Image 1 (cartoon, rainbow, N blue to C red):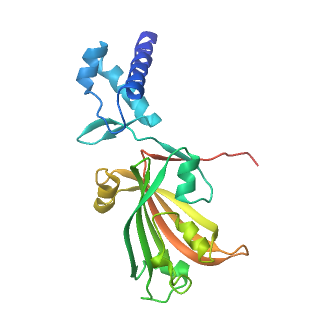
Image 2 (tube, helix red, strand yellow):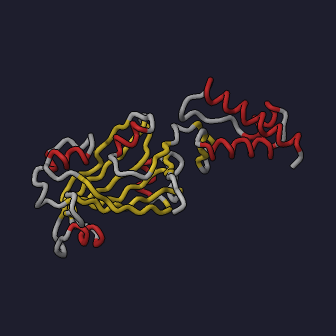
Image 3 (cartoon, rainbow, N blue to C red):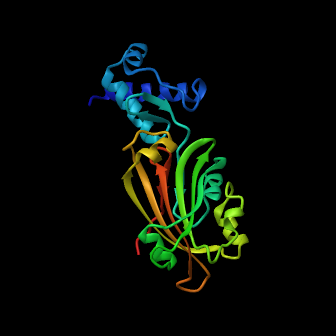
Length: 239
């Protein structure tokens, strides 16, 4: 690519950044590529590259079949043990929670094994939609042992679940977590306001209470995050 083409791309990106910050609001649609091509007097390739850069930066988000929209913000989180509310506030967002379902049910095998439950023994299921600045970020599914938390279902679960566990005498003090790429199911996609099959980040966490190894299992959680609104960062050093 020649230097002039690169300068045009940078200029268009800056124009779009100014538009996003000064005129448009989160959730607003961006003009179509043809309109932007005519407005800025540049090629379609230049427009697409500028938009792609802003999507990568988290300023814009593409929704298949609908267009390109101003993002509600990209949450960048370091890998550490914290509640969703603490994580969001540390990133500069205002967290909120909508409880989807609180019930007693037979958990999947991985959750039952972690919690030490017998086959077909029920556990508490707490399923919640987590939001940052009013925009959906994740769907959290937590399985918890009724024998240790008999009063949990009567607690206020719109706040921090970790705080509720701590108030019950079983604070989360250790956790093992994996992160993998996945495709959003139809049900989860509807809650996160994305297309079914859209890429998401799947966090699976085994939490323990107690400071001594290995600790007492207290929660098995699966959290599904919008990949366009949540990013994991980490600091690495050579040993």
